[in-house]
Amino acid sequence: MEYSRAVRTKTTATAMLGRIIAPIGRCLTPASAKEILALRADKKAKRRVEELAAKSDRGILTPEERAEYQLFVEVGDFVALLQAKARRYLSEHTTA
Image (cartoon, rainbow, N blue to C red; front, side, top):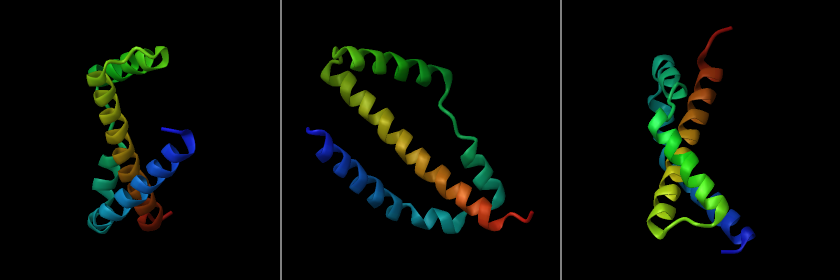
């Protein structure tokens, strides 16, 4: 897939996901927002992503590994959107 098409596709998917998870923003509390901001992959997942990224850089991913790597990327995007919503919530609902 050419780069500009891939970027447009990812941007469209991210925007759509943002709309889908919008109701989550209405359910946040300060405590739940802080929990979302604390979400991190565990050591095993981080090691696997690093391994897949290295193989991707070398162009030697199998189709199964490519699918696994894509899933990690998509989950990361989802978590990033949730964390953006949590940050926005806290900025709007935390007293200084």
